Length: 301
Image 1 (cartoon, rainbow, N blue to C red):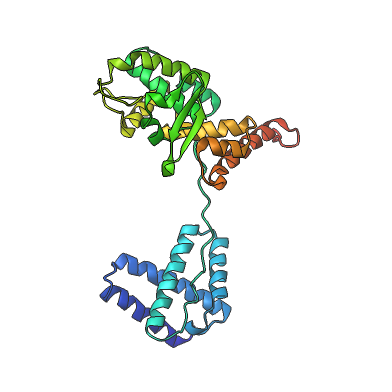
Image 2: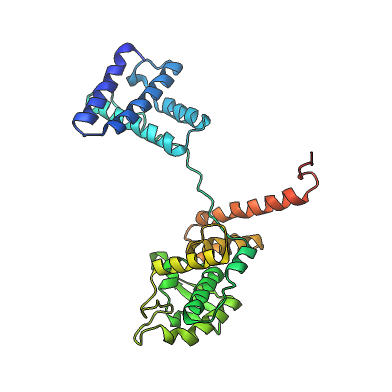
């Protein structure tokens, strides 16, 4: 960069400090990001901010990505560059913003946690036949059997479950209704709960699952009960209601189920949301391969 170009950065930082009241910590971040961009421009022979083009910024993002910087950090640096260029346009120093439409590489979605089949079976072996335990068993069996969201579970009424047909009618996101199968053990657990539901439910209560005060059980209460049973069973990881849904989808795919079918069961409007579970399934297959294939096993030293 030519020597006079950095004064525009200082003026921009003064603008952020005096007019927009940004904190010293935020200003330090902007300065650091623009220093990084200026160093890249020097390497590319870009001498003035007015000479900076979109392809330069894409190269800048690519360089940051290759250096191992996280996509969120790259996006922050691009955002700082975009703000600086908008300031330069306001000051009539440049005519367009080269950072427009330049985006950071997408962050990899973290793979969801799951329990394996044995862990799930161990968790669902819940001793006791009192009303609270019977209710908890029915809730957890249904979460795993049908892959329900927590909000879907707590909104159920008894009429939503057809134990003869083995289905449950669920109202999911966007007020969309779907019919989901209910497994044999979940049906058994629900039947046991319905026999004892009157011990907890208020006489005018329409909810399938109720709390100890007789009203519809709250999501927070379900979370607490799941956590209680996970600790009691000795499972050495955090267990929460949505983990049952993750495990449901993963175990179906591990068993050879069709991705489109799993999408329908989960109520995903976009199959790309369901595809996250194919990565988990591949991890499972890769582990089997590593253990079984003679050319994959590590040699004992």
